[in-house]
Image (cartoon, rainbow, N blue to C red; front, side, top):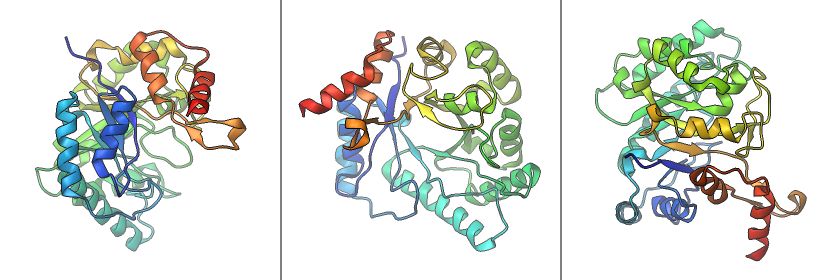
Length: 306
């Protein structure tokens, strides 16, 4: 029997590196996690501490975290779909190459990437640009895998349909280094019906293939289907609902795929104080398969006890 592979986004700081990520994940009761190697909004990156990385690997092994289920998320500012500015396009390509090298140094084999936004160039040209960019990034047969994330279709985002992702994958030479990251909120907001997840998986299997699913972002949505908004909600408090999400998480065909929570932090005192991570409580709910309608208040109570 395969154990549920569940975790969340955690923080990577320069002073704690990968070790801090592992400790945070364990505190949430997780057995996997996702992190950015620096702020997601910029490309400022510090040196990787080899000793901290070694300790992180040892702590993972001791606590049953399989490193092959751990993922890195590339920063949002990488955009391979828009080549209007050649310098910006080259920067995106070169920085993504650096992120893959950082992943390799850390021992992580999967890097999640937003495909990009065409910004007025049109979907077809955007897809062509992404293919050209990925062919330069994945120019050798070996190395970390890129997981293309399903997108909500906000603005001029590419990747809101399985067919768009299929076109990208087919155009990349070393596409054995490409997988897909399903995002439940994004799928809903893009127009996919997650109340019949078996049907959705059958469609994905027909177009791309289930063996290409490398990760799942587990998020409820603040918006109805086809809203193209991309606004995450805490598990069970959005339009997807707890029961639907549990069915997705425990789908037998995806039992070996890591599931990562990216749900919103909970504000304390109406947002006047700092926000608090919900992941320990949400992971408990998921493991118990029982919705806690008082989740947000319980999180606030825990914070106030600190």
